[in-house]
Length: 200
Picture 1 (cartoon, rainbow, N blue to C red):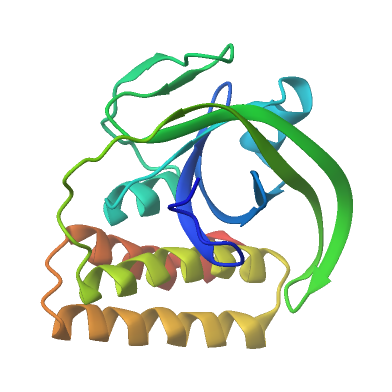
Picture 2: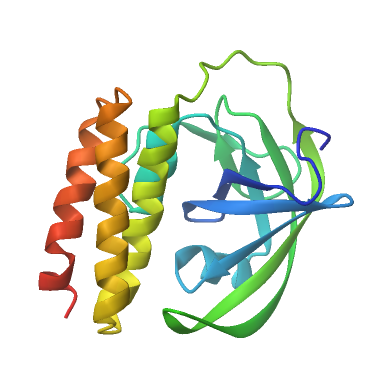
C-alpha cells in the first residue's frame, strides 16, 4: 500500500463481478477510497461487494475501459475473493464497503456510491513498465472530458458541453504536439464532434 501516498489521487482499474472501469482512488490509512456513478460497476458492488484494484501504466487501457471500448486482457481467479482479476497486472483485492448518496456539481445531480476497498490480498511485485509520456496524460484527459461531455449533452447543458468540447480539442492539439500517435485520439475527437447529435 506504500505505493499509494495518502491524499493523492491515482488513476487505476477496478474489476468487479462483470465489469472493468477506471477509478480515481485515494488512500486513507489501510483503505482505498473511490466513487462510482450509476452503471455496471455500481450495480456489481451493490449485489456483490468485492473488487480488485489494478495498477497499470497503459493509458489506452484506462481510456478504452472508460468508454466501454473493446480491450484485450486475460482474466484469472482472484486469490481471496470470488471474482476474476486481470492477469499480469499488479493488484489489490478486497471487500468493498459503500454508502449511497446524491451529489450535485456543474453537470447536475447524480446518484453515487462512496466506496472503500478493504484489502484482503496484495499482488504488488516489482515490475518493469515503460514510463507514461507527457502526451499520454493528454490522451487520458481527453477520455475523462469525453465521459463528462456525454453527461452534459444528455442533460442539455449547452454551456458546459461547449467548455468540455474546447478542453478535448485543446488536449488533442497538445497530444499531437507532444508526439502522440495513438488512433484513439482521433476516435475520441470523432466521438466529441458527434456527441451533441446522438445524445439529445
